[in-house]
Length: 271
Length: 261
Image (cartoon, rainbow over all chains, first blue to last red; front, top):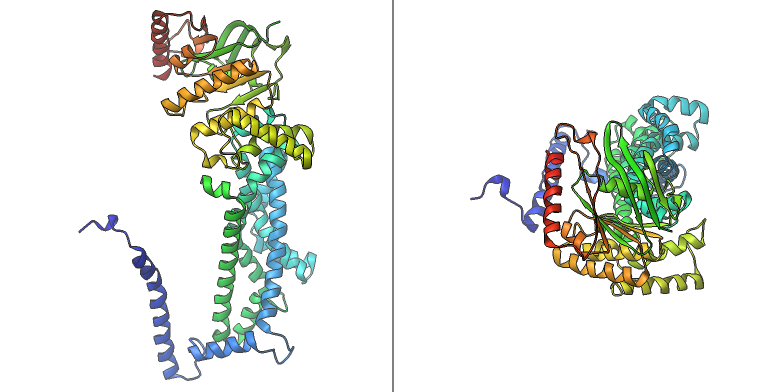
């Protein structure tokens, strides 16, 4: 028998081993839920599968009695809109400033210290300031995402731009390129796939800031709903919502990855 | 008038003298190979030719004027690595120079102009033997093919001087021989003035019209930086016998040992 450190799982084994923890967790949940509901049929902490499906039916597939809208759909659209606007604006700022500071030493000298300082401010600590300045509307929530992830994106992209080999920058000059052309024909196209991977890394924080902002001031949204029903200990709504958010995060990440592989084959092929 | 004139050229970094009292002149159409131990200023010399470093003392003249202190289209370059742009296909890499020239803002051209550029680029690629790889990205090409592409990309700009910085150092011996033939062929056909840095002495002897050996005439083993390297041999290639190669090899090797220790 081989040493444990040299043993690999086969293709079937890998799937089985990967699924095992999920199965164990699900079984544990069902057993614990049964036990609690046996003792107290009104227990809310670990709802049964049937109350989950009731809750999902109610939130996703029936119009709300109060407003006549599909609650899950409205919440999802509201949250995705905030997330999309916030991340898109951050990516744009990150791209422009990151390229400028990464490829032009004079810009780096002027802007980098400010960005480094900004990135050390905990964004949630200035959330009250955002609410005071921008009011309780959409702008404050989007601003929180922007303030939360832009410094990271700028610093990451600056570093990626600095990593472009000097040989290539010299090469461009020997082909007659001016500074603007070096940026538009060399730095920008090479940074784009790196921007996508930085955005993928920052999406986790973006969700965090979105849910935090919605928890405090919103009238719809995935984060708002979770914190609203918390008052009634409605675990049958909270857990499906968490699963839905997780799925959305996974889907966005997967889509960005696939897009990058399709659009920038030279980047993924060379790695 | 000589294409390149070097007049009493010095390069120092603080206390360390890298090159001292360099004097030479190179006519148009010459093919100069520069050999020497690592640390003897070959790369520094190349950087001064490129314009990314400037001389501490003395003059480096291109067509009678000081060489510009930043890279530009008068001097083309092929590096050992990273010479071609990974995000462009082979033909786009070669078209780039033309696009940059005719569109200062966009750096791109369209329509008939683009077709003309593409035709030129295809012709150039055919002359380096890459006509079968037009649409391939550099990462899909072998090391030798990438260097062929880099040559095509540099040559389409018709630079006054072509600089080669150990361009074949990372290639297998067989491929290296093919590349030597290609470079000699291009140099003859296009009347290029070439400087090629190499640390392969045999390569220096085989290629080109003239070989320079950079070596330290005076060498203090305790402080190797106190004297700089000079051009210790300036040989016309083809007229030298075996004995010269041996004595150069010995001298370069002993310098390399001191600098590498």
